[in-house]
Amino acid sequence: MRLELDEYAYLDSPIHRWDARAKLIGLLAIITSFAFVEELRYVPAMLGVTVLVYALARLPFSFLTTRLRYPGIFILGVVGLLPFFSGSTVIWSWGFLNLRLEGTLAMLLVVGRFLSILTLGLVLFGTTPFIAQVRAMRSLGLPGILADMLLLTYRYLFVLLEMLTTMRRAMRLRGFSFHPSRFNLQNLQRLASLMGTLFIRSYEQSERIYTAMRLRGYGALPHKRITPAQKQTENALWHRVGLAIALLTATGFLTADWLLSGVAQ
Image 1 (cartoon, rainbow, N blue to C red):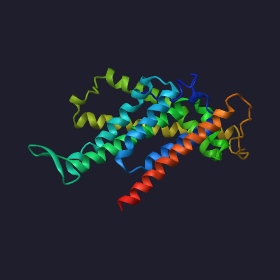
Image 2: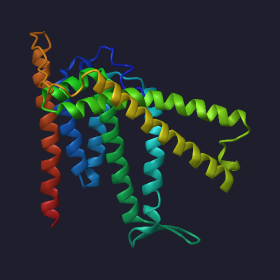
Image 3: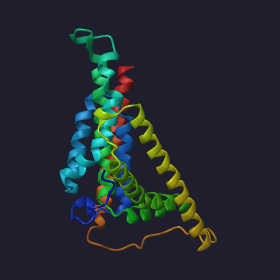
Image 4: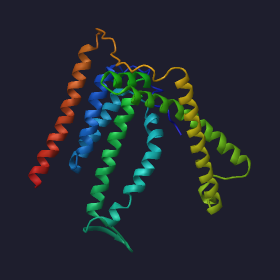
């Protein structure tokens, strides 16, 4: 499982050179507008914008596929049955299975929004070092306690993953198989015990970390708002232009969907 989000943050591309605060505002605005789209006819445009942004970021295609795998399986498991149970217009039938038009359209809309939103989210966090992203959030008003929680969560996800890998290796050496074909009630109980142990260990470690931070003075002084130094660079114009384009794109999707919904009513 790949948890690194900023392993390609060192690349040189227009999206990488985009100011972190402008990038955060612009891409979040587009993501929000995509989340409100309710018309399937806008999905190709959404995917087109997503492909364009990803191409400008120059991220490897493997970066996207390795991180879409597990969320993709989850979303397909959630909406995969919609074409067979939602709607009344049957477009294909085979035995007791009836493929319905309304469910198919709903599934395509959900999958299109999912791919667009998750891909833009990966671009947002994959083209900026995580610490720089958190600093940008702090400069835009994110409370200090939430910024600390983000940093600690991201940092210790790798520790927990290493701990899980060690526990799985120990179980495998003792004869336990993680292959789905060999799962039974006893193996599921062992797997549940594994997850429970991991949860308890993570809780105990969080207590130790918080105690160590308190002993070193954490919380004694209020958080100060971080304001990144303003630099006059040759890309200053691109920061503003990129933000304007992103906001116009988001506004265009929201306006078009609102107008079309009003006409339909």
